[in-house]
Each structure stands twice: as structure tokens, then as C-alpha cells.
Image 1 (cartoon, rainbow, N blue to C red):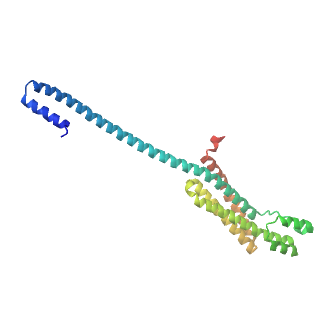
Image 2: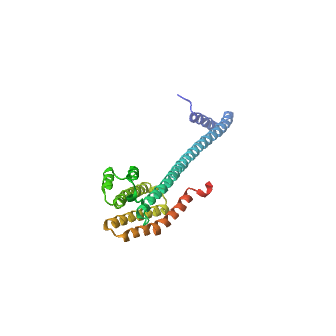
Image 3: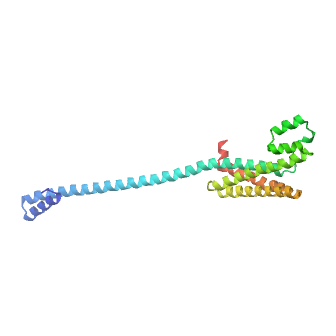
Length: 240
């Protein structure tokens, strides 16, 4: 049978009951063992407490690091999204402005020589079938301006669609101020393209004028506001 501390303590207790010199010795042994037992008990409790505290501290550090890592990743994504969104907005604005502008620049191809016209058409976005139709058209300038409009409109629609999809897919990384303004710009650009298309199909100039007015009076101020907000989010002032 293994001799445990409880057995020893019981033995000393029995001696104390009997009395005598052995009782005195047993008493001091009891005090010594009791002191050692109490010190051991407190040491174990202290060690357990330290372990629990360290474990709690480690858990806290883990949560803080996880939160910091998540915030860092969000900020990194924001630093990626904002410049791209700004670039797509500028690209869409350029295409839409090209369609809606009342000052359309176009070379007078009716005055071109055959060689000049062929060279011009090589770099044109017109389809090969359209190029052949243009060469056979009595009024080449009229045919070209009509055909090129739909190509420009299609490119503008694609750029606005690209902007819209990017904003929708990355809206979580935009704060309320930026999200609101990007959405508004996207909405106005799309509306301006509809006005331009209706204007061309109905041969009614007032719709193209409305489209141009929307760009000038609604989108242009938004561009300025978005630029300032983007610079603020990217801490542009601290990078100078």
C-alpha cells in the first residue's frame, strides 16, 4: 500500500492523541507538513492562475491579431478598389462624353481622295461590310457619321456596364459617401446614353442636348466630389 500524505497526517494525529514526547515531535512534524502542504497548495493554485491568465492573454492576442488582420485586408482591398473604380469612372465618362457632345469632330471624307479614304478606313472601327457600303454611298460623310455613332454608343454602353458591375461587386469596400456618389454617376451616365440613343433614333436633337446637360451639370460635380473622397481615403495628403 502506498504511503500518502493523508496516511502520515492520520498517524501524527493518532500520536497527538496519545501524548508524551512523541506527541511534541509529532506536533512539529504536523506543523512542518502543514506548512509545506499549504505552500504547495498555494503554489499549485498560483501556477494554475498564471496558466489561466496566460491562456486568456494568448486568446486575447489571437482575437486582436485576427481582427487587425481582417481590418488590414479590408484596407488593402480598399486601396485596390478605389483607384480601379476611379479609372473605370473616367473611362466611362470619356466614352459617354464622346457620344453626347454636341461638338462632334469628324473628317470630311467626301473630300478625300480614294487613296486617303482607303488609308482612313484601315484604322476605322467600322465592319468590313460597312466599309464597303461607305465606299458605295453617294454621301460618304453622312453614312460614316451615322455608322460610327452606333459603334461609339456600343463602346460607351460597355464602359458604363463595366463601371456598374465593378461598383456592385465591390460595394462592400466603399464607404457610404463614395458608394452613393459612384452609384449616382453610374445612373446618370446610363441615362445620358439612353437619351443619346433615343435622340438618334427619333432624329430629335433635344434629347442629345439633355444628355449633354446631364453630364455637365450632374456628373461633373460628382467627379470632383469623388476625387476628393478617394484622395481622403487613400491619405493622398500624407503621401506628398
